[in-house]
Amino acid sequence: MHFPKQIEIIEVGPRDGLQNEASFVPTDEKKQLIKQLYESGFQRIETASFVHPKIVPQMADAQEITSFCNELGLDYIALTPNMKALERAIEAGVPQIAVFVGASETFNQKNIKRSIADSLEECSEMFQQAKAQHKFIRGYVSMCFSCPYEGAISYEQVKRVVEQFVKDGADEISIGDTNGQANPRIVYERFSALKRDFPQTTFVAHFHDTNGFAYANIIAALNAGIEKFDSSIAGLGGCPFSPGATGNVATEKVVELFEAMQIKTNIQQEKLKDVSAFASNLV
Ligand code: HMG
Ligand code: MG
Image 1 (tube, protein in one colour):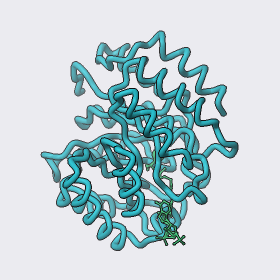
Image 2 (cartoon, protein in one colour):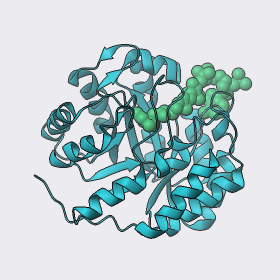
Image 3 (tube, protein in one colour):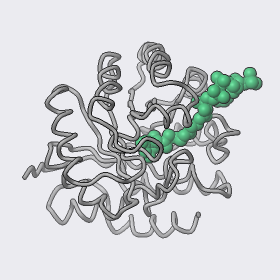
Image 4 (tube, helix red, strand yellow):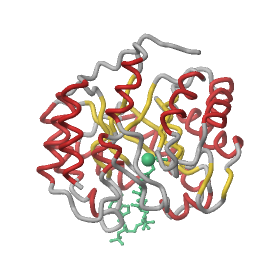
């Protein structure tokens, strides 16, 4: 078993947690949530998404949210699905961007209306532009274990996207169980294979908790050597293009789990309980 002294939790609640909410969460309340998370100790928070505001109306206030994050002095991540989004993010002064491509062709088409090949080509250009602006670049690979449209996803499908992100120079790659159907065995095997094939790359585990296996999956990923985990406060979340998927793994439970194992998170657990209650009331 692998027991590092410390792991990093990247809070994705303000983006992945809220993006799927049907009624618009007022921008001021989103700001309060971000501030409370920041004060609880998170070094990096995914706070906004420069997707098409008609497609994901909940993220239409990305610019105002990012101005607020800049004032706070936060190191935050914003989602940028295409070149237009990257331009908007650069203009807003975002320090860290995240591109996202599916390992499943059907999901990628539904999510960003492009083939995987076209998405990867556009991502290469985006990486160049973002690097020229000294941005930290996260590459998300979605549906890395199975897909609601295609069923089982092979390791080769995941590897194809990861390989291109690595070539383009991603600073970290987040491996998503977008529909929350993975189990500890496939998680352990897939992350072990990724670490074997891309030993210099930093991988992050991103679990949605549809089946209640997400905490077991975190331990399986940890055992494969993963030390960075995405989670969402109060377990909020879901992807509009991943039918049946529920929230992300809940941040407060992930913190509790690691702290119980004497693995440091640098998050203030007591404070987080109040933040979780606040977040639950937003939806
Ligand atoms: P599109 O319709 O193909 O865009 O959308 P287009 O390039 O054809 O342009 C059409 C019009 O949209 C044009 O305007 C563009 O300017 C405009 P017009 O000339 O007709 O007036 N446009 C934009 N406007 C604002 N912001 C933009 C933008 N791009 C084009 N960025 C697009 C392509 C990718 C934008 C669209 O499909 C989209 O926004 N998709 C959103 C998908 C999404 O947000 N999914 C959820 C996040 S992914 C996720 O949750 C998974 C993750 O958590 C990891 C995991 O769990 O696995 C990350
Ligand atoms: Mg997600």
